[in-house]
Image (cartoon, rainbow, N blue to C red):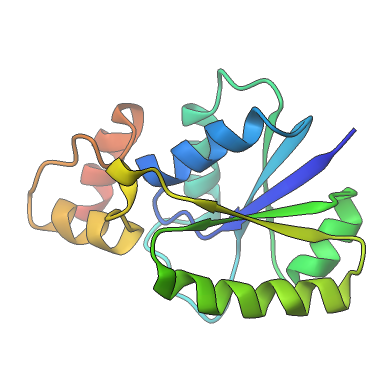
Length: 159
């Protein structure tokens, strides 16, 4: 059984994230979508909110599990028995940083490999930051975030 981890802040989950989740779930026996609790960042949505959004949008994917972690990703992969880390790439600019992280993760956990998955063309422009800005300014999020979580995003960001 091959277990993969797709880590991220998911603040909030976008259709780009969901696309990577769906595609990865078809490749691996088990996919853990791991929400990062990073003290260096100040997310808009709490870890619990982000995990709930992910549970809502992945409820039809039986081999997908939602979890959270803090600390080193390499240590988290050891703890959950994962042998693959999934990293989504939107553009070449994402690759440089993610490539460096993959080398570090393999150094810290030689039993883990990083798989880079490119975003689908219709999601390449998406980022959680842009989604939050559009929502705050009252723009439509159709096609950017899963429909099931749009109202919750608006509710939090329009306060």
